[in-house]
Length: 223
Image 1 (tube, rainbow, N blue to C red):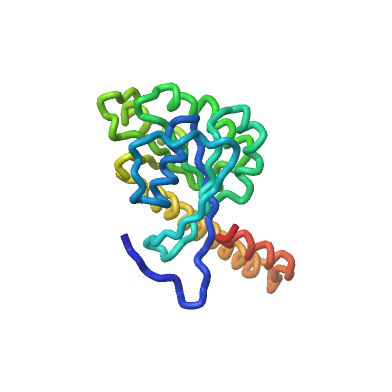
Image 2 (cartoon, rainbow, N blue to C red):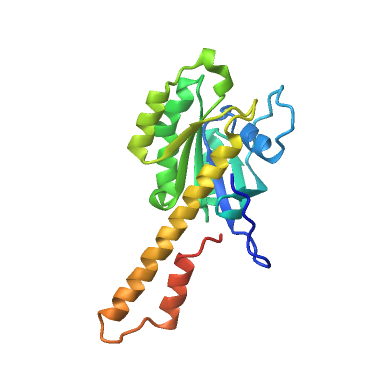
């Protein structure tokens, strides 16, 4: 992992990341392990009620990044009300299931991807599938092959993690941040090429100030 510092005097970009998945899959435990890696995980963390978020500074290969991680209850009665706020200005989403609970995996396609598409522009969001509780291999109900098929269908990468042991927890968040960063670069590049094309193909025609400002905003990484 690179620890390249952000340029002196500049603020690290802030990326809003949301956690999705059924109650009990370990979303809150993953965030707790990320923000406090030395915390004992020998007991269950109580389920989140409503929305909570934590902010964590991460050293990534792209420099320092501030991740604002939103965690909500996995129960549908909360999700219906809270998801519009949850997704507002989000840059990435981590879809979490429990490898020992097949129903939690099935809920990703039956419920959470539908909710994601209803409340956010799925193509614009960086997405990562996380199979949690990899320390409970003996109780596995979801094969890696099934998870890989899901990723192929919805166009995302995956990792298996253990909030209890800490395995791959930091890596999962860093991986998602990398995808967010690359999407931002792609959007900025496409925007610049589009502006050049308009200028070159219209005999000196240039975009007005308002259009320039909107183009700059579209390429920005900030929330």
